[in-house]
Amino acid sequence: MDKKENIEKQIHTLKEIRDMLNVNRTEFSRYMGIPLRTLEEWEAGRRKMPDYVLRLIAYYVKTQKWLK
Image 1: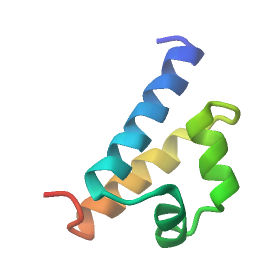
Image 2 (image 1 turned 135 degrees about the vertical axis):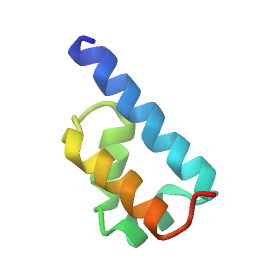
Image 3 (image 1 turned 90 degrees about the vertical axis):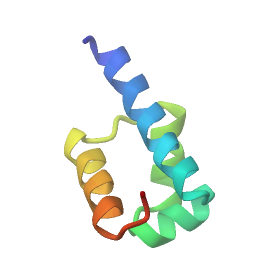
């Protein structure tokens, strides 16, 4: 997988998590402690999210039982 495909996959996964939680960017950024601007830039593909961050978000959401 090349860099562009990896970024697109991250963006898709992050948006998918937010959609499953039924929250907007502002609510998600507050709950996760991520600056809103950073989240916006990740989702727009202007900034690459570190790979470990997405794994931590997914793990945190699952352990908080947001995802069923």
